[in-house]
Image 1: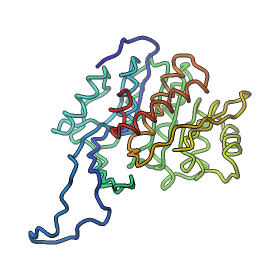
Image 2 (image 1 turned 90 degrees about the vertical axis):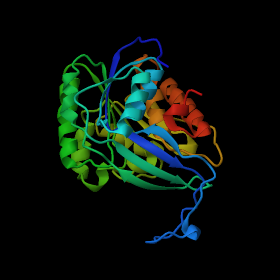
Image 3 (image 1 turned 135 degrees about the vertical axis):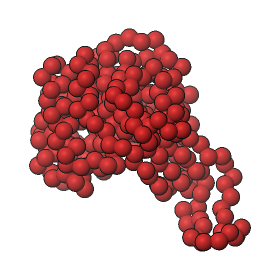
Length: 307
């Protein structure tokens, strides 16, 4: 259901994925066979659930549901699965930028009874980052890495960051875990000089810096150029800091036996929603944590964040 549109335009760039959730699957279930044998079939007790994923699509969707004006540069396909993804985005009032892709990214997520996961991931077509420059009126730009990015993606993103910032657009970046395998540390640190707000999990951001405490990590990250840094800490909540603003942490409610798929995207959307509405960084982090907790309880990613 679309919220009432108000506030600045937020442009989002990143992937969109159909997440297929298979719950309560023993992670060692089944064995490879080349003939039918009923003893090799693991029967599911819960239905397969399809939810909206992807660091771009999921974040954009929830921002739209929260009432923001949102455009999205992503690779939603014209196939049957893309129709489902596109339907969710249209429901949230999201404007898609550029032509559709031919195929849609799909992530089959097998969740054990204790919430551990295995993935089978088709990443789909690549996001064309420079297509975002067609959206010249954006006041906020959010970009995030995904499972197919390379050093060339980062170089193209930096060009986009520079153009947006030169026009007064605020840049928010969540690198995710994906760039670490293909990008040199020096390249990533240069990219952060073009970022207003840097977001990431503690595990992801710590791959670029050694540190003893999360406060020390944030100090180091702020020294690299971002005006604000937010560190997602899973069940421990989030830590955050800004230039001349100090560093602080907020706890979050712990939820047992949780499905955390899409929770990071939910947090990002809540944080952006607060920032673009002029809230303090602390208030924006609180919004992100509240929505993320709701998403964990519902177990449907961004589709469950608003109840």
